[in-house]
Length: 225
Image (cartoon, rainbow, N blue to C red):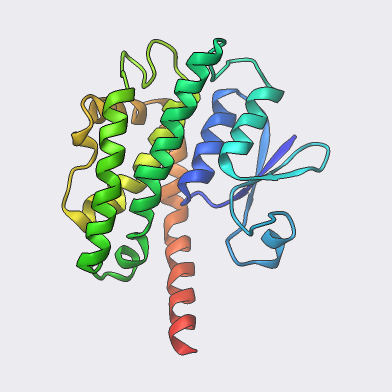
């Protein structure tokens, strides 16, 4: 049985968890936060999530974990059989990560500290997000799924990328970013109604108070130095 290490307030942790639940794979969860010696012992870069396989191998980086799960457990496939179609799915995932999630993540420290990001940071984030909006508008089909008729890894991946975009990008920039990509808001709402997504969201909300307390403690410790 695999073990999933991390915490439920993390969108990338929840991405991997959704994949495991989709494939109906048995797994255990181990609550662990960044900066701990326990995490450094199993994650080369000290990042979550991490999975430990039944054989004791530790694997980090969410996209790598997802591909490992897909290749090891091919039932309920999340990638198309055709290589070209697989490339399109992976392209959507990579663009969402680089031009949606990562720029929005720059705003997290300001949002969690209750301050507004500097205008220079906002301008830089908007510029990158606009590239993502243009690219995703060209690539996404939402007919009914993000890459077409088949539910794929891109649906799960982008859905959890969007949690960061919605929670931090929109609040700091006063910008409904998902609405800029035709069809994305309706698709995102549909994704949120699945039983798996709702279960994952319930766990996220339950973990959030403890996570915020950890963040507050780290912030206070940094300011005390």
